[in-house]
Amino acid sequence: MKTQKFKTNINCGNCLAKVTPILNAEPKIESWSVDLQSDDRILTVESENITADEVFKTVLKAGFIAKPE
Image (cartoon, rainbow, N blue to C red; front, side, top):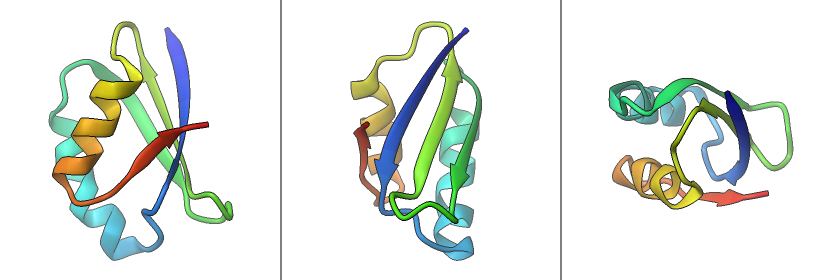
């Protein structure tokens, strides 16, 4: 399992509610979480084979940005 971390602009519970179904629907993502307490709102993704670009595009579908740390 590979862990990737991304800086995001997901900054509140409503934002999290928008991105949750999209991240949950991505079959390559085993698990994920967003640290809303962090200044950089770090998205942590656990996956065997998803690329950083695929994570970026998945998060973008919800209207947010995820940049690799």
